[in-house]
Image 1 (cartoon, one colour):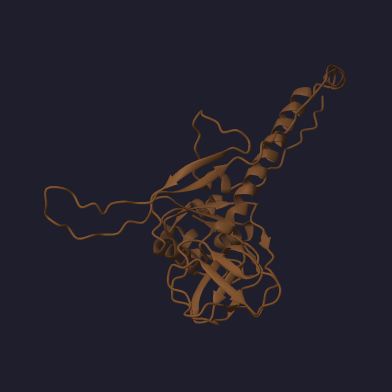
Image 2 (cartoon, rainbow, N blue to C red):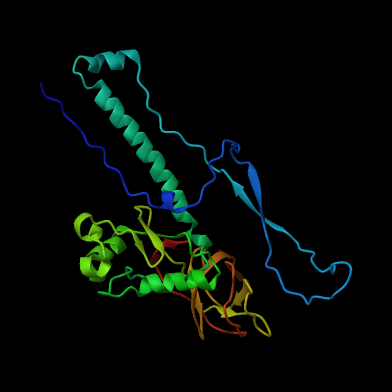
Length: 299
C-alpha cells in the first residue's frame, strides 16, 4: 500500500504569543466598541496638615476604544459523494486533517498580519532604515537601543517582547557568536537547536508578518508654529513641503537625534504617538522622512 503524505507548511506567527490578550468567556460583537479606562499621569502636591485631605486629587480619566473589526472563518466542507469518492483510497482522514491544518494556518496568519500592522502605534524607532538589525558581528546595540526607548517611556521591564523578521533572526543566529558560544552564553540551545530564547530582558519571536514599509514621498517640510513646541507635544504643524507624510512613517527633526513614528498625518499636521517630543522644537525646524524600512515590533 502507498500513501502520499503531504506535510502542511506553517509560517512563523510570532506576533500572536507576544501580545497580551483577554480570553474571558464574555464576548464582544462585531464592530462593537469596548471602552477601557486609562489612568492619567499624576502629579505631586505639598502635604498640608489638617483634619481633612486637600481637595486637589481630581483627575480626568481618559479612555481608549477597542473594537473587533473582523470575524473570520476558514471553511472545511465535504459532502457525502466527495467523501465516498476518496474513501476507498483510505486518504480521507489524512486529507481532512491537512485541511484543518491549512484552515488554522490561514486564520493564524491573518491574526499575525493584523497585529503586525499595529506598528503605527509605536512611539519611536531605533536602528537605520533599510538595514537589517543585528547585522554587525558581536554587536548587541540593537537590543540595548530598543530597551532604552522602552525604559525612557516608563514601560515595565518584566515582560518585554520583541518580534523580528527572518532576516534579523538569521543575523542573530549567524553573527552574534556571544550567544551561541556555550562557554559565554551558558547554554547550547542556540548552537544545537537554533533556539534564541531571552536576551537582555526580551522574549524573542519570529514572524513572517514583518514586512517592508514604503515611506511617504514628503520632503521640504518645516515646523510651523511661532514659538515652537515643547517636550511632550504630539501635534506638530508643518508647512512648505511637498509630497505626503503617511501614518507609520518615521520622521526626524533637525537637531533632535530621536526617530519618531507618525501616528496620524494630514497635509498640515503630523501627530506623534505618546510620549511625544523628547526635546523642544523651534519654528521652521526641518522635518525629514527616514525612508523605507522593515518593521520589527517591540513592546
